[in-house]
Image (cartoon, rainbow, N blue to C red; front, side, top):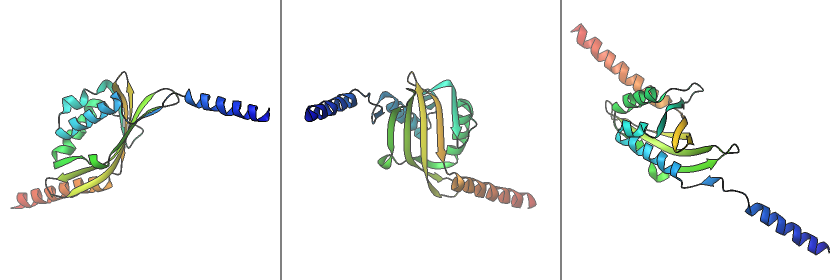
Length: 172
């Protein structure tokens, strides 16, 4: 009788575990949308990049204060225009879609962003993490996390060199 009870318990646990819905996905329409957005970013196709977002998307860049889609696009255009090349290391990227406990759809992306500054030919490699929420196939919220210290220092060095050059030119 005891063995029958244990077999029944094991069987019910097995059946209960089988009925759990899948919550993690390596591939989905949303991961493909994020990859397409990254490709558009890397090619500088800002209209295609924006097409993956709803117009009211909230984008958080190392901050709890969101920026809008147009403002983020302008910042990215300015940053990438200072670079002779930029993009993510796709060989070592990781992407997954998760249905969280509230049944919200999130895609998480980890990769290294590489960029070479045109003015100095200096290359930077910065680890980046994206947490992107989707509703009806579009991005409604994006959280971007990275350590911008080295990038900000390079932009400051370029600005200082340009200011010194302009000062020297105006003195002559």
